[in-house]
Amino acid sequence: MGSHGSDAYANHVPTPVTQAGRDGLEALLAGPGKAVIALDFDGTLAPIVPDPEQARAHPDAVPALAALAPKVASVVVITGRPAEVAVRYGGFAGVAGLGHLVVLGHYGAERWDAASGEVTAPPPPPGVAAARAELPVLVRDVDGAWVEDKGRAVAVHTRRAADPQVAFEALREPLGDLAARHGLIVEPGRYVLELRPPGMDKGVALREYVRGVGAGSVLYAGDDLGDLPAYAAVESLRGEGVPGVLVCSGSDEVTRLREQADVVVEGPEGVVRLLTGLAESVGGG
Image (cartoon, rainbow, N blue to C red; front, side, top):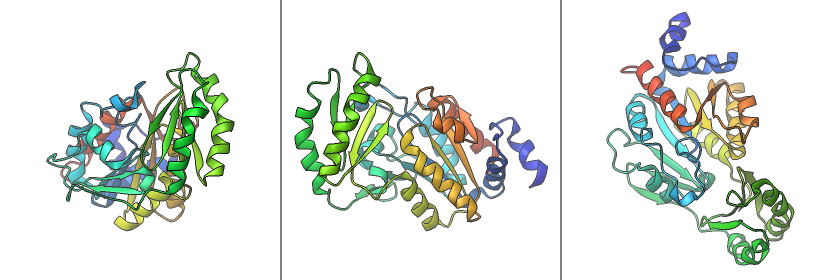
């Protein structure tokens, strides 16, 4: 679409700071019907809150997704949460315009399809249950730390501690030892350490999904260290001829995503504006 594409999104969507990002956005706008819009949930569609059970999608997120989804190949939410929980907290079920939304929970181990309303998943790995049983004793001396049971994974949060970073660092080594004993890995995040089975991350989930859809372009938006594998997947896909855009839902807590992103927006509100801008830019696409 040449220069017309850049003019078309100039007033709606931030111009990517990298050439690869500009190429990705150009491809997305030129062929929205082959574009995959992939999004993290917590910190990207939903503001980060002290209690993860109170997390809810930004109030304008679902309307923005419903405006964009019919104009692109697919919208997929990729999260470490159980798929059903993300669907409930996101308010994604039964929404006009989101009939083809897919939620990949537990980093892709679970899949929820809006079309059927059903979750498909393999049985939980035994190592998670074994680690879960040991965690209360392990964290009891770290003031403010608490355990979240995620079904196929278990997470220890330190955001409520008097000094969240000190508590986080105190738990790194013992949780690493616990994970190793039970064949798990530790995924660090924003004042959270998650123990989960190896072999699945947001990058694996994104790559498999993009290939399955046969996407012509991909946009991925995330905010945390767990999103770095998805960033790497987009970089890899670019090398294979699938243009992509990397979006950081900005946070001062995590700078590595900011440094690698093509576009930085300010949190879920900025993500919503970006999605709305894309929907307007692709028109009837």
